[in-house]
Amino acid sequence: MKKFLLSVNFAMLILLGVFATTSHQEEVKCPACGSTVKLEVLSSTNNLGGMDWDFCSRAGGAQPILLIPGTCPNCYYSGYYGDFGKDVEIPKEVKQKITKDKMLKPLLEMKDDRIPAYVKYDLIAQTCILTGKDDLRIGDQYLRGSWAVRLIWWSNMLPDDVQKEVDDILEEHRKSKGDYERGNDAAIRTEWGYELSAKVSGLSGNKKAYTALAAIYLLKTFGENPEVIKLLPAVKSGLKAEDYTKYEKDIMDSINQERYFQKKAVEFYEKGLPTLTKDDEISSMNYSIAELYRRLGENEKAKKYYGESLKKGEMPEHFKIYIEGQLKTL
Ligand SMILES: [Zn+2]
Image (cartoon, rainbow, N blue to C red; front, side, top):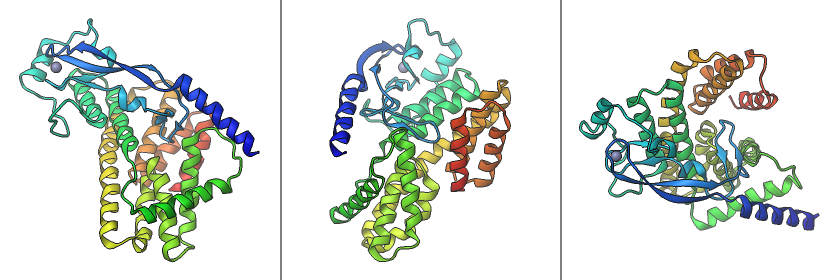
């Protein structure tokens, strides 16, 4: 069986080679101020990383979500490749707001043109507001901003000996699944995070702390932040006080950043929801709003919107399965 698995992995590698996320740089002109802007343009990608419950799509290898937003380093006009096209016309008064009144403000002061993707998404949302785009489109930018925060989080805060214990627990859990059926890798590993989390209360001492750390690693990776916050106290006994303080700050800074975007997304989605007329779109938007509220820890509102989502008859089967899973976490 091991040989079979190896060959599957090998096949995956070939797939990654063929469909790896590749991009090239193109120089375009900012339609607001005329400066030259360097954009990453995707040549190919894949979805081998699966999809989080809130539709954050993951590639194997480089993540398109982190590559595709573009920002003019001079005036901060922001968008995607198409927003920098030769035929893009920006009304004079909007141009003035961007170039003279400097109304586009980055979340972070930038010293060079290496602007993080989440800052670009915030600027794209601001640009959409200035150019009069509809609320749902603006909400989409903030949702992507929350994904960009999630995708750059990487646990590197633990002392080496603790990290090894955590890695062992993760590996043991993976092995306990045997030759599990591969599919949506993000959803599978999210489930594993909840499974490990469920074990924590029955454990004690370092084993409890390390299992909580393993669960947090998986759950934080996929943005299951309310469960991460619930688990943090169980970690305390396994780390030195100063290590715990650093670890908690790293996690909470990232969660708060993600939540900044999620709050904005939900605000614009709720405003835009009444403009939708097709059942499947209404269902899908209610689901997205429910997911945002769940991730923000606002469970009653999440339940209400999951309920609205289920009311519409023609819902894809996988939505119903997702919702059953989500409701269990509340
Ligand atoms: Zn510009």
